[in-house]
Each structure stands twice: as structure tokens, then as C-alpha cells.
Image 1 (cartoon, rainbow, N blue to C red):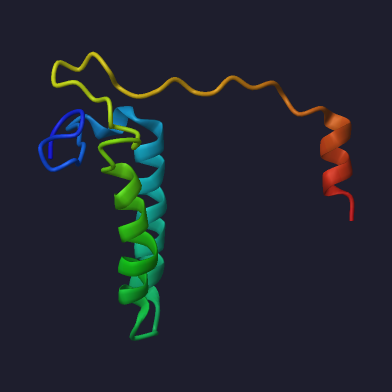
Image 2: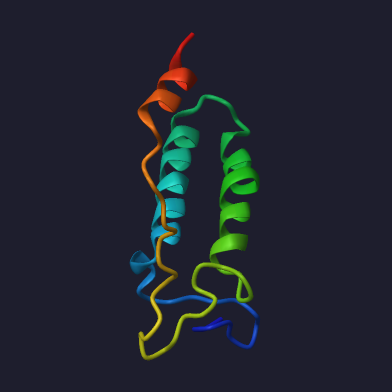
Length: 99
């Protein structure tokens, strides 16, 4: 594991918080963890591992297409820029929220 997809094909940048997708996925994992910890269901933690942690880690650590796949040891790459967007027209939003 290393910057830009190390020998094992996994990518990790110690400055993970610079990648919006990575920090967003960790936040989602944290919320799911808290929910599983508070659950009375005996299988809640297994569900967290299988349905939350493993899928997110596969994306986060993917050395080919993951958010840190092009990380450089010298810090010259710290994530892809956000996609361009324009605000959604107000009338379209109104149509979507009408019941």
C-alpha cells in the first residue's frame, strides 16, 4: 500500500482529509458505526462490516480508480477537483418537492 497504488495495488495518502470523497465516506462510516453500536440487534456489527466498511474501503483504497489512486508522495496531487455545476432552477425544484 502506498501513494499512487503501491506494490499491492492499494493507494493511501496519509493526508486523507484533503480528499472530499474520502472524508465524506469516513463520515458516513462513522454514522453507520454509531448506529450499529446503539443497535440491540446481535448482527448489527457484522452488518456494518459487510455492508458499510468493506464496500467503502474497496473504493477508498482502490489503486486504479479510487480517490487517492493518483496520490504522490511529494503531495503534488491531493484529489480531483469538484465537478462543475450550475444551480438547479427554482421551478424545477418546486416541481420535485410538490406532493
